[in-house]
Length: 177
Image (cartoon, rainbow, N blue to C red; front, top):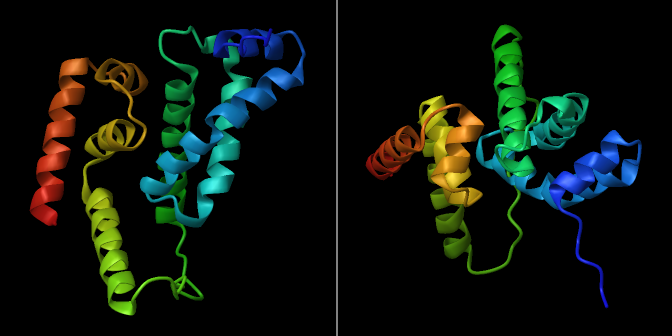
């Protein structure tokens, strides 16, 4: 009879009791979702570093995790804060990109590839233009599929406010696109 997979709470307890396998499984389980969120939030080439930083901070502060939300929601919020901190640092430092070329994989007809890339760029640009709270709510809902109550806990707001922010984000994106 196969064993039931450990819950996030059990893996957290394993980590607290000195078993690194608990932390490794949590990263394996939720790392991709955190990376998807950060990528959609515009982290660019910093995604991997921010994922690592988010989990590092999460494990440092694991005693403050009370289980009122899912572990994934909590670590996404930590990643969001890390991205905000990175953007603040980048605003203070002047960075000049060396190479802005984008590479196309060559599959499909050239006009389809260009249309798809253009639409993808427009959506990404639209998301970047959203106010921070709307962007966070939109990405957590649309990309990660989190419920409004989970989004609200992650962002320190109410489910009703999360619904309103999501509605306004969708409305703004439609207008921008």
